[in-house]
Image 1 (cartoon, helix red, strand yellow):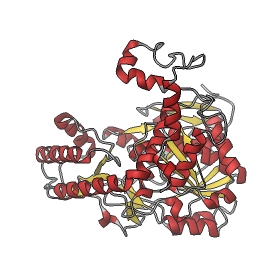
Image 2 (cartoon, helix red, strand yellow):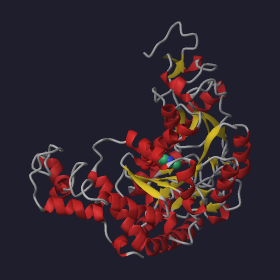
Image 3 (cartoon, rainbow, N blue to C red):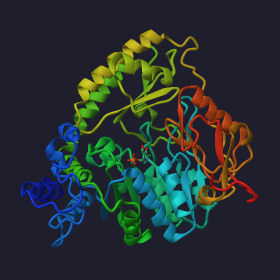
Image 4 (tube, helix red, strand yellow):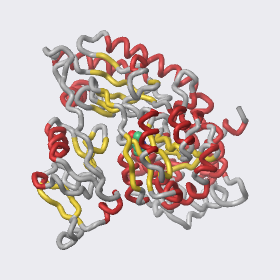
Amino acid sequence: MTASQKQAPYLKALCEYAAREPARLHVPGHKGGPGADPLLLEAIGERALSLDIPALTYGIDIGPDPTPFEEAQQLAAQAWGAKRAWFLVNGASQGNLSAGLALAHHGDEVVVQRNAHSSAVDALVLSGLRPTFAAPELDPELGIAHCLAPQTLDAALARTPGAAGAWVVSPTYFGAVADVGALAEIAHARGVPLIVDEAWGAHMAFHEDLPAHALSLGADLVISSTHKIVGSLTQSAMLHLGEGGAERIGEDAVDRAVTLTESTSPSSLLTASLDAARRLAFLHGRELLAQTMQTLADARAQIRAIDGLDVLDERMTGRAGVFAYDPLRLAVDIRGIAATGYELAPMLRESGDINLELYGQNVVVAVFGMGERALPEATRLVSALREASARAGLDPSGASTSFAAPPPWGELAMTPREAFLGSQEAVPAADAAGRIAAESLATYPPGIPNVLPGERLTAQTLAYVQRTLELGGSVRGASDRLLHTVRVVVEDGSHGGRR
Ligand SMILES: Cc1ncc(COP(=O)(O)O)c(C=O)c1O
């Protein structure tokens, strides 16, 4: 451990600036507190407002090298084993946008795992990259998507000789971890970088019992949503460049892409929270994660003892698309009770004020953070689950809730960017089959795109999305959240326009 990992240099510099009570003749207009509405001041405190300090402040992110800001990013790179780390203030979403723009320096096409997050799809729109989608392994029992099998990536890259890169997701929302080592080998053998959206795995670098993290397995660029589990503030995230990534993608290309996708007024509170989260993870992550893993192992055993409930855990390892399992999610298989996740989630909310991260038909997911007090939360969840499942009763069909697999995606008739920017109109959903989508339709949770801009809409997919809405889910990306209408491309160009 280096002495400097014990520090949080950026946070310290902010505190020193605030303590000096300088003349704040700069933004933000609240001037560290006095200009803020009293309700905000009371809610978040003068201290937080005093640390809300703009970019380009001497002694914080400008001045002699390395500035505290540069030092903080260097410490993060060291902690995660990256060649370089960027702090992001627009979430892992910004990481995906940056990855797409950086890749576009190297070609026009890219292989993307189909259940990529919507921000990866937004990256296709921004970058103009033409995607070849690679299907993740579907779990027919649970009705969820796992990771990409290495052979699927290989086949997709073989179909896309001009690919600028391969872009995969691991871990998934449900905790499935991909065989990233094999994926990296395949990508590199085909001469392209591997981008891993590890939004859900920022903690994995800090305990040897957790699945190995993507950078350690040869990934070139890793998107890490530090706020999700490691405990920085919402919206803060990191982008890590691997050793090979510097050569295969280019540090400058990534740097420019990060700048382009970022506000010129990044929040110092978000950045400081990243600096501090890195410190916590590096110094205490191992011990905190060990405690959380133990608590969750106990909670899993208690949940499995409840009639009708099961859990997702390391028993999933070895299923198609599951190379390893990340235990920091508590995913509960509810197929044995007479309620879907859409019905169970409100029951848990009403009975115990339990607010879940995610719920689908067959699985509900509770997320646990690296350093939180997991025990009381897990105890609360277990007792609310016990009560709610007793109320729901057992599924008479015996753990066989049928899962309607999403229908195959439509043909890619134009790039997502062409469709997004092209002439378009809203048409009734009933008339949309056969038209080219100008927007995404991603049933949510878990936000996997069923339709992407540029793809031909099929009647089956429209019916599937409608059915998800009827079951209580929502659809992300759609301009009409109720899906009465869908935005489609005007193909002959003679009518429509961007209305
Ligand atoms: C796989 C994946 N990537 C990226 C993101 C975007 O992360 P953020 O909300 O930090 O922008 C998410 C968010 O849930 C995600 O699940």
